Image 1 (cartoon, rainbow, N blue to C red):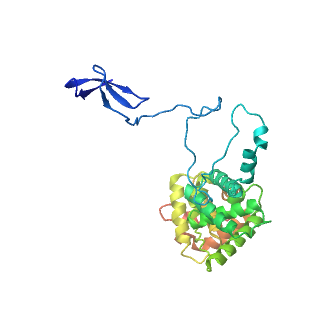
Image 2: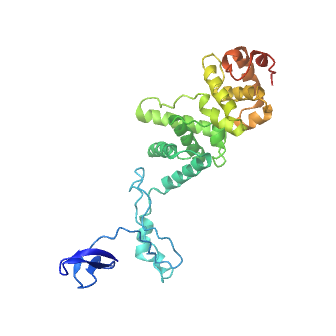
Image 3: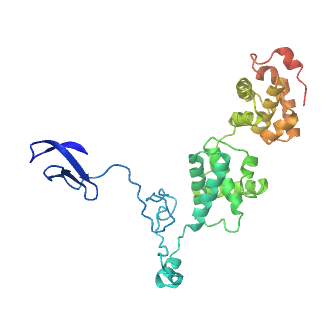
Length: 312
């Protein structure tokens, strides 16, 4: 109880809160000081009819502008105490005829969300992938294509557009069996369809070796000093005309940095951590070696250390 001013008692008296009616009542004279007040405290009663349902949440999910009804459709469930006759009743038949037209989209969005969670992607990338898939689906031209490959390709494109690229091999690892070749074909198909929709080429975003560096270094298990040296080295490498993919350059730089450190890593470990073949890392190393004195920071390695560096 708390104290409040009572007009009849002409003084502050203790009051009682009647939560069911929303009234504030003077405990001495019974005068209703405030009526229909709103209780702003937490309230966790269970409103579910099912006896085994103890979930106190009484709100639905967030709206989704990509769905026809915003994701707020009504589903009539089977009432308690009834038999299976409900499903054959007129109400059940009506609900069956008016089933959710967005069932396919909802299932696709769930698959994209699962892949995003497994890769540790942020919500903005997941939302962008959902948007890309919806635009492709609206064109009604993807029938008969590999659904898993399409969803994986949408996620790959979304990562590129959000400047958080992932390798095709990383996307393939969560693509429910879709191969790299299938994902590549799906990506080309999506880019073509979106280009036809807008009348212009789709902006995919440029890939730089630095985009992969921190994640690859973490996979290898490098210390902070080595990671800093690798990031500086890969930025310097972009100044030279090294005709290798950014992923290959990143893997080769990581190999060089680890060989110059006390904690040397074998080529096989670098290959597993980056997803780049050992032969590709060797060839990239050969392309980087002529510029190595200008790429590797002077604070990390001396000239004599660079000369003694052995080819993998």
